[in-house]
Image (cartoon, one colour):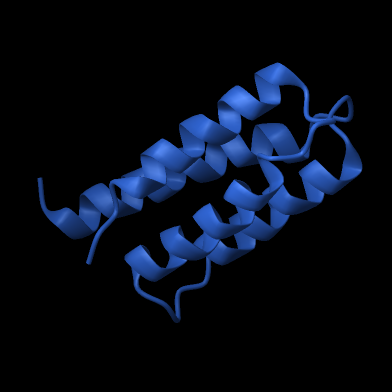
Length: 89
């Protein structure tokens, strides 16, 4: 499979998980907001896939330290980070 297509699929997969987090009202508001910001970063077509992934990872990495985060949500965020870490230019 071509790298561009693979990157696109990884980004779509990450967005799908982030949408689950951002629409889960049992998740604290600041964490849902970070998920939405990450989705926006991933959809920014003006940047390369690697830069979009790095921007989203930066947002998620910061929020993953939140002590109020429910464990299942933290696991999903780590999953998204590991998906996005595979995207390199």
